[in-house]
Length: 246
Image (cartoon, rainbow, N blue to C red; front, side, top):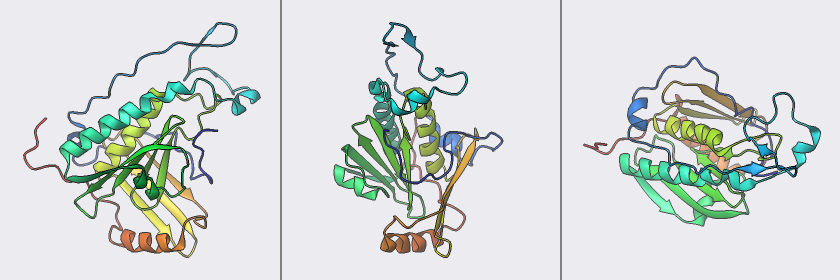
């Protein structure tokens, strides 16, 4: 169903509150405006309007887990990602690469790629971001050394996601990474991959652990381990372009 990952890395759809804004977090977000996503009306076979995002006040019906309806409702994610790329590349010292070959950054290869964009901060101690556009339509963002973030993770009717809600998560990921709120760990002994992420504006934090790094290429894990040793306290913030003004 959709862009589902292989093995769960923990819940990524909840952002517990209680954190504080990251240093420079407001500056990272300054000047960004999410593009307007045109509202579309969807109806069920009986003609009743479907209100995605609030369909199931209780548990979703069993049959909804195997249904992916009206997938065009996720198209807005591509527009949001494009605007985030434009914002970051204009505001921060980064190098941009465009082309489907950038999708090789993904930990789990994807076969339905439309395009990919890699933003590499010139500060080598800051995490890169690779945006991979899929024909679901969806998005996979590779952050740093060892983690892929999927939007949507599934896309089935039971999950009841919307582009607006997923856009919130996408922006929190991107701005959290750019503000220096992202950390990764790889435990070679236990074979575990772990990440933690704090929202730039302090609106929440989340983390996840993959308990089996076996599917990841051994040489890649070795390279990542060396890279992460240089940032034991987490990836640093991206560097603003000198004299940038919104």
